[in-house]
Length: 143
Image 1 (tube, rainbow, N blue to C red):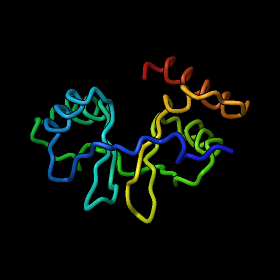
Image 2: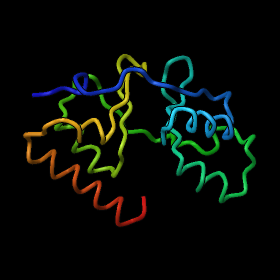
Image 3: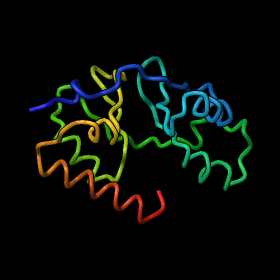
């Protein structure tokens, strides 16, 4: 059975608690990504998405200088490199999320996204079903 280690991205661009909303947005633009993990000494403490910036930042009239800590998601669902891709796909479906930080010994070591599953030949029907449910629900709700 395939492990998260086999499909995760291990080159991760992060921001820290010292960064503000504007700096994160600029980094997202430069990297063409929609989510950036927030770390404190290599330990993941949050995740910020482009949607967080819009909903919790701009729509709440926060300035670009707002601390990432004020708008990031702090309740994170994480996986380990040794977790099976099937278990990770189920977590994504259960929590309706598209990205999972990969953590080992309290350190952020990678990230796995819905796309990482999509580019592989999934032979497991449960994983395929989980991923199609996420895509459909996020599409229907405008995410």
